Amino acid sequence: MEKPFLRRILQLDILGNVILLAACLMLFLALSYAEEMSWGSSLVIGLLIGSGITFILFCIWQWWKGDSALMPPRILGQRSVAASCAAAFFIYSAILIHSYYLPLWFQAVKGNSAVQSGVNMIPYVVANAVFSILAGIFVTKNGYFAAPAIVGCAIGTIGAGLISIIGPNTSSSMWIGFEILASVGIGMAIQQGFTAIQVVLPLEEVAIGTAAVVAFQSLGGAIFVSVGNTILQSSLRTAANRNEVPGVNIDVVIKAGAGTFRNFVPAERLPALLEVYNGALRKVFTAAIVMIGLGFVACLFLEWRSVKGDKPTSDEELYRENEAVEQRRVSENKSTGNHRISRTPTGLSGQTLLSNGRALGLPDSQGQ
Image (cartoon, rainbow, N blue to C red; front, side, top):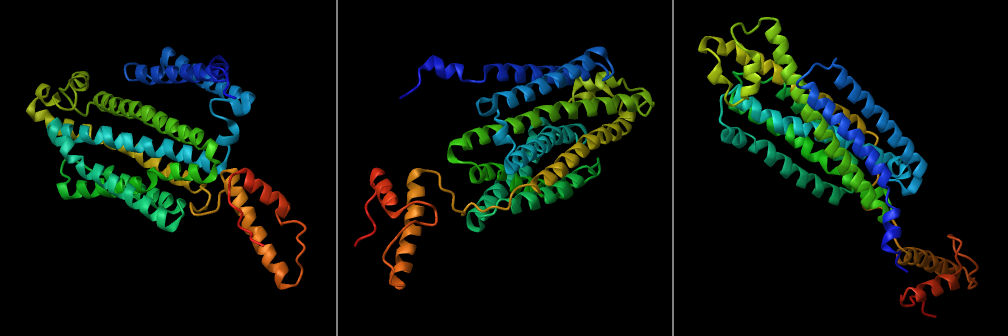
């Protein structure tokens, strides 16, 4: 019988949602204010402490709620689920860093327009999509999802490292190659967490596991876009304080944006500023190396299980599996002259299996 609508609403972890929303809100506000103030300001510190305490309260609440929690600890604690969530957080952080700050590099350092910087990202996007599909085909044929996740993160880490060394004089062939290498690795690894969820969890829990992976993806991307902007602005201001760009108002450069700051900088100061801007963006790209590297470590904890493995997900599949065992037992008994069947290896009698099969509407397969 279907539960009343009000009862289903009350079963939702509404308080857990509110606690998590409050924690994320304080975290994002702290990251936003850190771009305008110093990390040592009382407001930023207070928001970060408040966010941390609220996240701890959220974890305690989830543990207390058990299986009725927003993110059930029993599911998140499963080895491959936890590894998939961590890998999703780290990999998607790197993707957002590249997707957001590589176009800034094209505009600020190379002097490209916004449209041209988008065109320059096509190799990254296409390689990601193609190798995501190829990795899916590999998993379908081979069965194992851990291999492309691990290898992909290793390749992505190398590619991210190469992206971090680009400069004003880097040729098109080089940065295109770096883009493709990083994106190939990320494309191989990015979808394997979802495959792992479908393999290790029962059918009725797959939706919860998938939602958890998506949540960690979104959280990683949201956090590290802000972290990258903080690294960029703090690096530019540090260079200005060291008088590396004399005669340039760095606050005007930051407010003008990557596409138009050249209009506010004297021509003789532009080469020095480009070097400083490039150095700041390279620090941002270094964060992507760390993220993909941590994603590689997370993928090492994925279980080495195949999508082709037997995984009964319903009473019908369980019946068919036990029926096959019963048929083998019948054949063995007939070959030894013993026609009496007492009990199957799974603990179910032949008559019980036959009754269960009829209850499920399945045809009898043992003709006498």
